[in-house]
Image (cartoon, rainbow, N blue to C red; front, side, top):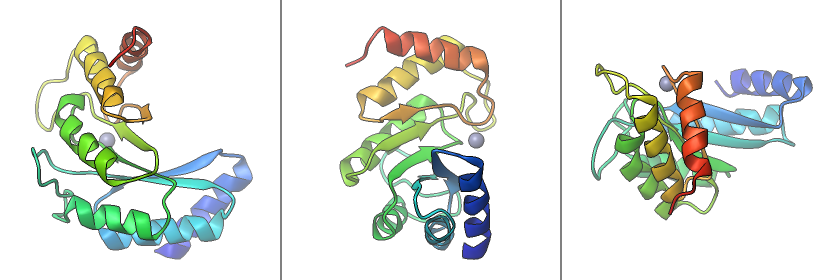
Length: 166
Ligand SMILES: [Zn+2]
C-alpha cells in the first residue's frame, strides 16, 4: 500500500502540487502507509491527513471503528504536517471532533465537513456558512467542503467568514 501512495505522490509532485492531503483515513495502518508512502514519493512536500469519523459527542471513532486517539497517534508518529477531519459530518456535527483534534495536536488542523448529513436533507448554504465560521472559531486553520458541497455553499462560507468570527 505504501508503494501505491509513493507512486501517486511522486506523480503529483512532478505535476507541481504545493502539498498533499490524504483524505478519508479510517484505519491506522492505512494512515501509516499513506504518510510513509507520500514521504517516500514526494519527500519535499508537506503532507496532511484527515480522518472520517461517525457522529459522536465525545468518543469519536472512524467509520471502521478505530478510536480517534489511535489515528492521531499515527499522524504524530509519522510526522503529519497537518491533521483534520473530512466527510460524513455537517459543520455542526464536526465541531466537537475538530475541537478535540485541536486540543490534541500541535500541527495545523483543518476541516472538510459535508453539506448533507448521512441520509438527511442538505443544509442551506447559510447554515453551512455559519458552521464553517464556527469551525474556524474552534481553531481550524482551513475549512472546505466534502461530498455534496457546491460552489454556492463555499461562496456563502467565504462571505460569512469575511464578516469575522470569534
Ligand atoms: Zn466526502
